[in-house]
Image (cartoon, rainbow, N blue to C red; front, side):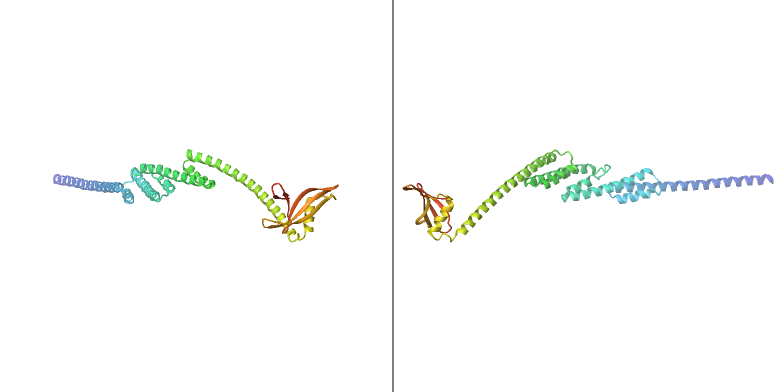
Length: 305
């Protein structure tokens, strides 16, 4: 009886062990399947993210990279996320730079081309070429503007354009030489202006003096107008003009004469010497203004005195 019970108990224990082993294997298999499925999903997301990177859909790539972190917190994936963000920004800078470049805003484009990432394999070298091109165009444009302004003697404005060139190319030899040349030209121009101003002042002073002389003569003539109405007046005018106090000097109006449409009194000035007279000269006095002329007998010309 006891032998039968013992056999039965051993059989039960064996069944329990077998059952437990089967359950363990089932659980282990399920866990393995779960891990396999999880790895498969992780790889699918990773591959999807890489595919989006290839077509430059960086937002989708970042989204899928971030989903892989739910399965595995991987430093490599974090680096890929940062790279995607960096290239996304790099692409945006390049596209904006090209937009400004096409609008001929070369300085604005230049600054954005400089922001294109070295890790942006598709655009970095293109951006470097555009940087050189922008600098060349910008420099040439500003040099041309400076030359045109300097040609019109607008040196201060020319300096501004040369400074723009030197702001992006400090060692530009053309801009440096032009600036030195224009500084010299401006100095020479200022000296010429100063000299011209001094000469102008001199001319102005001479003109002023001449004007005053003409005004004085005109005033004298004005005072004389209407006064020479008699021979006696003509004699007095000549006598005062000669300015002699010699009592033997005589001033006699010998008549009237019209020369070239102008009426004159003819005044004879002579000196009484013992038993004869010595002629000093013949003078013409204009009737209209009292102006006195000495008659040159040899040339028959009236010389104003």
